[in-house]
Image (cartoon, rainbow, N blue to C red):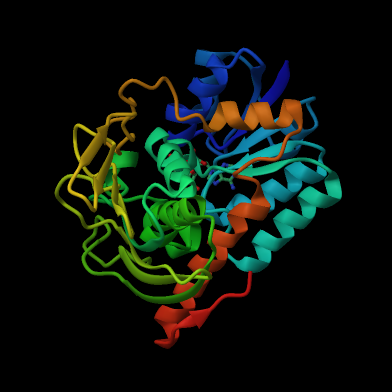
Length: 347
Ligand SMILES: NC(=O)c1ccc[n+]([C@@H]2O[C@H](COP(=O)([O-])OP(=O)(O)OC[C@H]3O[C@@H](n4cnc5c(N)ncnc54)[C@H](O)[C@@H]3O)[C@@H](O)[C@H]2O)c1
């Protein structure tokens, strides 16, 4: 039985990590820490386990694996501390706030011999898994282009607060790009198995304001143009100002037709073929900020995957060495927006 600890006991821990670990028969949550102790206590009351007074105390309590679910700025520091203490880590996205930090996390994992996985849960959505199989089987022909979006009204709908650390440069560092764009950038790598090597981006704060009416200090929109090593071109949009229905969709254009993923309320995968035939599948639904239930699925799959990868010591599709490639793209997007130039990435 894998002994698990939770570092950071906010919303993602409450709705995903805690329930999904607790449903997994191969692990047990034994330790909790949050800088706001009442948050840790309320989850410990619900799921069992001990609340610790510091991260260090938790890491030396006999836990074997931890989830790192703190604010973005602290991901690298806490993750490296946990790896050096001999724990396997599942760190939430975005992996960290600079490429140097991401590289130090990967290095700490190698040095310690402990696993480091990043919470790129979109890889486990069933329509994404099915689409990847179809693309690799050649069903849509040669991939030409893509269009992927993750846009909702903003983190207020997630945290339930009109203002939060998500809006502050000091704690979040990224806005919509690191919050939502990293998911879709990583998803393109997953679906195409073809790394993004050129990036051009506009990253803007168009509308979002703090509760006192001043503009937030991180971006609320990122529009990125990507080109892969194999020559596929596409657009990635991450936005916090979509005041309509959440858009978490991806279109992949191939020489034999178009794949539409999570682009229709009834069918999570639609394949519109060049010859006019249409295939429609309802494989699952994605969670939204408002609704964390997942249609016919019981969980996101990311926690079970982490536990299985650690126990069986098998390579993972969300290993840090893979996740860092999407982070390189996101940092290149920031550089492009800053300089007005197209940035080339060496993976
Ligand atoms: N994979 C996903 O789809 C997904 C979804 C939402 C959030 N996230 C990520 O999860 C992380 C947490 O987000 P959240 O929505 O739970 O936020 P949250 O504000 O609800 O919770 C964060 C918790 O961490 C605690 N905390 C912050 N810094 C800390 C530190 N240095 N030490 C100890 N505790 C600290 C806070 O007190 C808070 O309880 C973020 O990095 C976010 O990007 C991922």
